[in-house]
Image 1: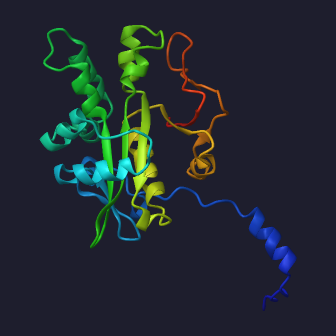
Image 2 (image 1 turned 90 degrees about the vertical axis):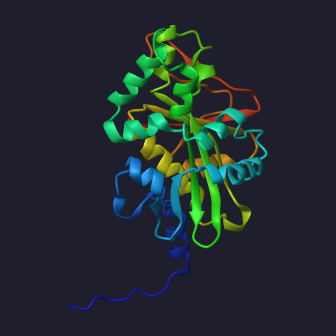
Image 3 (image 1 turned 30 degrees about the horizontal axis):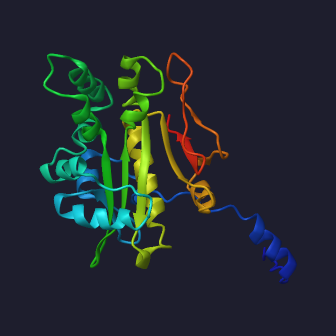
Amino acid sequence: MVAKRSSPNPKKDKAARRRRPSRPPLSPARGGTVLTAAGLAEGMVLASGVRIRAARPDDVETVRRLIALTGSGVNLDGALAAAVTEGRLSAAVMKGLAEGPDALTYEMAVAASPEGEGSVEELVIGLTCVLVAEHPGVGVVGTLLALPPARMLSNIGIPDMESLVGLLKVVKLKAVAVDPAHRGARIAAALIAACRQLYTLLGYLLLYGQFEVGSGLETYYQRQGLTVLKEGQGVPLTMFSVPAAIYTEPTERFFACDLA
């Protein structure tokens, strides 16, 4: 049986293009590989050859330069930069990937205990992740910063112990940036996809972030599978025993997604 080739119909073809859904977020690794501690450290190679991996000490200045390009005022501050250099950044993340989410509960208990050797500040550093996109022959051309919003959780009226537990349930996508010469290659999409996969594996329930009203970024974040909230709408936190939500300035909007 020979299939007939339909004759070209410009109007029909144009309508079909309009109905065509946007591409789903890029899978962070070939073959749908599940993220591991070794994979995060060594990197997951995309079909394009770009490698998504955890930041290393010699990446710090490039990460700072890239994030500064966003003009958001966000940067890799001294404590986080020092943690990258000293190998302390993402320590709890790596442990959680290697041993499972229960390992993070232990780290939280150590941080909360007066007799423990840890601290809440050190726990936050351990749960923070700086990802980079490394282009073969070029070097690092993209970066992403994500961390638990410790200050916000301690100021929204929930019990202290629940705000500590929130460090293991809520993560903020603080910044994502790509070198202008490499934009349009879905590098930011790959970084966001890797971030979502990472914190999902760690047992987190919610990822959120914010952007300037009027920036036009709502369409971009929607293409990544994120829900863009209306202006003035807060991010509800339903995992706590009391009603709580995150709010921001009137000049900013939120995006969010469930990770469970």
